[in-house]
Length: 410
Image (tube, rainbow, N blue to C red):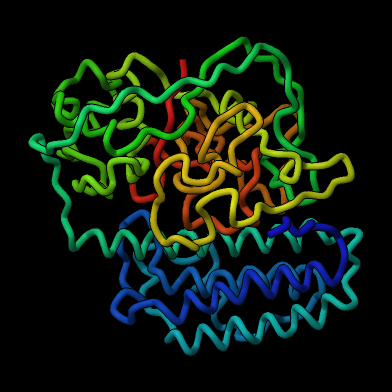
C-alpha cells in the first residue's frame, strides 16, 4: 500500500474529507446508546458531544468564518463550542440520529463551498480540520476503551509466573544536528517553525516498555517505593491509591505488548527503577525520522503512513506486540514509532522559536503553561492524518486515560 500525498489539490482534499468522515460515521454507528451522553471521566466531555463538536467546528470555520454564511442548525452553537458549557454540563445531547444529520448538513454545504474556495490561502485550514476531526475521534475511541475497562477493574498481581525480561536494547543516536519540527502545509502551529537542533550522542530504547518489563516494577514494589518517584509523582500516587496501569492486562499473552494507560509520573518512576530516563521530545524526534516515503519534503507536501508500517487507525483495535511491524522501523533502528501507544517524553509543551498561533490562540498557546508534557508517536487509535515525526501531543502528567506508554533513554 503506497502512501497518498497530501497537497492543495481540490480532488485530494475532497477525497481526504470523504475518507476521514466515512470512518467517523462508522464509529458513530458503533457507539453503545448508554455511553452516548454520560460523562465517562470528569476531564472529558461525553462521547456524543465530540461528534457534535466536529460538525460545529467545520461549520464555524468553513461556512461562517470563510464563506460568511450561517451554518446549519445554528441552535447547537453554544452546546458544541469548545469554550461553551463546562464539560460536566454537556450531557443533554441530541440523539445519534440528530448528530448524524448535523454532520451531514454541514458537510454538504462545506463541499459545495470547496468548489469555489480559494485553496491557495485556505488549504492549511482545510487540512487542519481533517486533523481536528481525527483527534476527536481518537478521544472517542479511548473514552469507549475506558468505559470497557472500567467494568473489568484490573488489579496488579505480584505472583505472575512470567520470566523476567531483559531491558530493551538501546539504539545509539550519534551526535549532530537535525531539523526539528515542520513547515509543511499540514503542520500544526505547535510544530512550526522547523529549526535546527544539536544533540549529543544518546541511547534510545529500540521499542516501548512492555507489560512483561513493567511487571518487574510492580513485583519489586515500585508503587510502594517513594525513591523511584518525583515528589509530585509520589504525592499523586498516594492520592490516587493506584497499584498498576489503568489498562493493565495480567495475562502472559500481553507480555510482549507495550504497557499503556500510564501517567507521566508512572513512566518516570519506572525509568528511575531501571536506571534510565525518559527521552526529551527532541531525542524522540531525531530517532523517529521515518523512511523516505514518510519524510516531509521541501515542497511543503507530506505523506501519510501505509498500514504495513505500524498499528494505527483502529485497524487492530488494540495494542500489538512490540516490533510487529519491521517495515516501520526508523532509519535510526527504532521500532513502534508509528502508532501502537503514545509515548511520554520528559519535555514540557513549549513553543518553538518564532511560534505563531493558528488558527486561533487557544489551540496550542493556552497550553504553554509549564503544566503539560509532550507525547509523541501516536496510538493504535490515531488516524493517519495525525501521524508524522514532528507531530506533538500534550497532556497533564497525571492523565492515564489516554492510550499512552513510553520508552526509556540514557
